[in-house]
Length: 382
Image 1 (cartoon, rainbow, N blue to C red):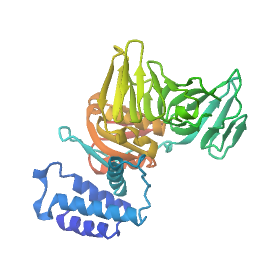
Image 2: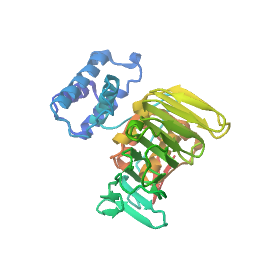
Image 3: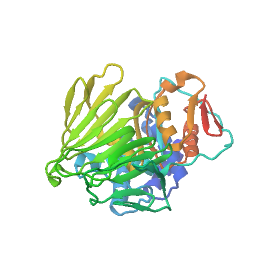
Image 4: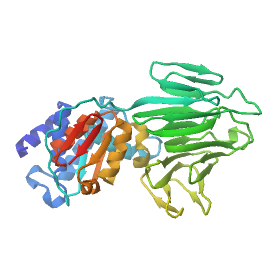
C-alpha cells in the first residue's frame, strides 16, 4: 500500500466510511512497522495515529455505533475496562496476527474445502445418574426435576434437596461451549472439549464440591454466606481448589502437561498431595504432571479469560499452541508438515465468531506461513 493510499484510507476510517476488508488492510499496513525505527515519519507520528484510532473507537462506543461484537469488561475496575477497549480496537479493524520477525514466512492460496468447517456453538450432552444421555443444543428444550434447558444453557433451581443427591455429568465436545447454573446459583462457563461432574442439589452447611474432569471452565461462585458458610471446592485430576465466594478460571486439558488456575476476584487455595498455595487476584498457579510442583505467577487476567467473551487472545504463544486452541473450537485437526513451524510465536487477537477460512485468509494476506492445505476435517500447515 502506498503512503498516500494509507493516509486516505485512514481518514475514511476515522470518518466511519470503511468496510471490513479496508479496515483489515489498514491495520495490516499499520502493524507492518514492527519497531519505532521502521516507522515512516512522512506519515506523521505513529503515536498520534494510534491516538486518533482509539479516539474514534471511544466515540463509537459512547454513541453505540459499533456493531461488530460488543466487548463488555468482566468487571467495573478501570484496568479491565481499558484492556477491553484495547481488545475492541483490534476487533473493530478485524484480526491482527503479528509474527516474530525472526521467522518470516510466505503463503499460498488455500485448497478448496472438501468439507465445511463450522464455527463452534452452544452444545453439550447431559448424562444423568441413571446413565441416560440428553443432547443439549439450540432449538431443543429439556426439563426434568429441578433442571431445565433451552438448548443454550442449563439451569438448576434450588429445589430437590434430599439425603441422597444424584450427580450429573455435562460434556462439551470439540466445537462447542456451554453455560450451566448450579443449584446453589454458582455460574459455570465451559469451554470446548470439557467435562464437569456436579450434584443436582446442595445441602446448606456442607461443602459444595464439583469436579472438572477435564477441559476449561470459568467459575462465578455463589458466596458461602448464602449457604450457611459452606465452602465451594473444584476437584481436578491433579489438584483441588477451595473458595469462599469468588471468580476464577481453571484450564486442565488432557492433552496439555499442566493445569492452570487463574484468580480474578476473591481468594482461593490451590492444593495437591504435596503442596498448598493461596492465590490473590491476577495470580495464576501452574501444576505440571512431571513433578507436581505448584508455581505462582502474575498474569494478564483479561488475556486468560477472554475466551468467555468470544475472543482468543494470544500473547507470544507458539503456533502449535494456537493450533490446539483453534482445533478445539472448530473441531478440526491442525498439523504441521514441518514441526519447526509450530514454534513460531504470534501476538494477536482472534474472534471466535470468525470462520476458520477467514482466519486462514487473514494469515495469507499478511504473508505469515508458507502454505496450508485443507483436507476434509484436517488443516496441514507447510
